[in-house]
Structures are given as C-alpha cells and as structure tokens.
Image (cartoon, rainbow, N blue to C red; front, side, top):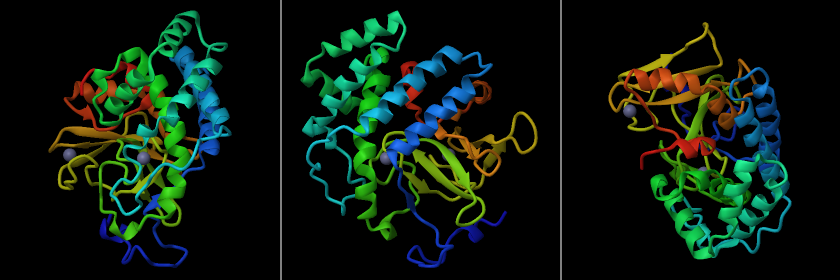
Length: 299
Ligand SMILES: [Zn+2]
Ligand SMILES: [Zn+2]
C-alpha cells in the first residue's frame, strides 16, 4: 500500500474527496449507537454482565446530553488542545451527580455501594481525581471510581468538542498521538472508506472526536519502519491490531467497511482476548478505554 497516496496534497482542499483532519461527534448519536452495539456484543459473550453494566452507563450518558451544560467554558481555539483544563469550572460535577443518581436503579448491589461512596465525596476531592485522570495519572484515583468519573467528564467534553473543533485551524494540526481537541489518549483506530478508501482515524477516549493519522505509522512513537498488522480469527477480520517493534506499543484498528456497526469503545472491550495475546508477546496498549480503567494499574 502506498502511504503517500493517502496523504492529501493540501488539507484545505475543498473537493468532496478532501480529507477531513477532524471528524466531530454528535454525542447523543454516538451513545445511542454504542448502547446498541454493546447489547449486540453481549449476546453469547462471556462478558455479558460487564457489557450490560457498560450499556446502562452509556444510556445514562445519552440521557445527560439533554442536560443544561452551563455557560460555555473559557476556550482559546488557537491553543493546542483547546479543551484541556475545562474541568476547573466544576460544571462536570453536576453531571456526575446526575449520572450516579440515574444509575442507582439499574446496577447490581455491589456497584450501588460504590456509587453511594462516590456520591459522598467533596467537590475538591472530585476535582483532584478529575485532574489526575485527565493527566493520565490513573493510579492516583481509586480504581472503582474511575469509570464513573470518566463517563461524566466525557459527557461534558463531548458536548463542547464539536463547537470547538469547528473553530480550530486544522492546517496547524500535525500527526499526533493525543487528541488535538482535548489532549486525551485514543481508544482505538477506525479505518473508514469515505471520502477515500482506507483512511485511518484515531478515536478520542474522552471527547469522541476522531483525528486523521496515517496508516502503518505507530500512533505512539510515529515511526513507520517496523509495524505489524495482526489478524487473529480469519482473513479480513474487522478488528485487527497494529503493533510497533520499536516502542512495543499496539493499538486496535476497526475496519468499518467490514462491519459498519462497530464502535471504538464497545468493540475494544469485546475484543479483550486479543489484548491478552499481544501482552503475551511483550507488547503494551498505547490506548485507553474508559470502560477498562478499573483494571488500569500503571500511570
Ligand atoms: Zn478528545
Ligand atoms: Zn511505536
């Protein structure tokens, strides 16, 4: 495959085939699709109970999209990653409390206990944990709280991301491993066929924005010489893994042309068996899945 063929001559090209550097999300639509996909993946899965819990959470996130988000945060669209730090205004905490209240009726008893403990935390403590999560210092936040905190933060970030991304100068955005809008890790790559065949985008784990990243380049260290694409079940399986022999990182790639129902977050969870295979070969994930944060042990 020619890599050069994938790179547009100009990011400002106005033709219908022009590559979009950023693809913004409609959060309500994303959450609805994700909930449907989680229900589908739960059928006959050994992870059925966990996928059901994830689905409950995503349905509450979908509902919260209609909540008042407060005044627009102070954002400089000329800054790199303009949504970094907007948690400081504290509006996300009201979303967290609503999310936790809504979940109480739908989750198992052991999870209810965790939720009640989290509801009793002070705003100062919640802000401190939010800052740690957003900086990638996951181990500084109790594992049982991470998923709930991230889910509320994500509703807030995805709400503002589309408006901010549309005002950013995308000609300034270079190949980057972290989200150009909010600075968070990707959850996985998606490979799409529009407007051109085989374009690869990284999907943000926090604000749901997708940003273009050249195929066969490591999304962590950016080298292109020693990349491998793993396919485990059969030829043309829709979920594959790209690994880097230089930094020993790997990330999943979802080939949407082979299964357009896939969702980066849902399909990453459901394909956890592939992570075990790559871990056994000495590779580590360079991505973050919010729904797997409870298992995250390192910084
Ligand atoms: Zn983002
Ligand atoms: Zn690498």
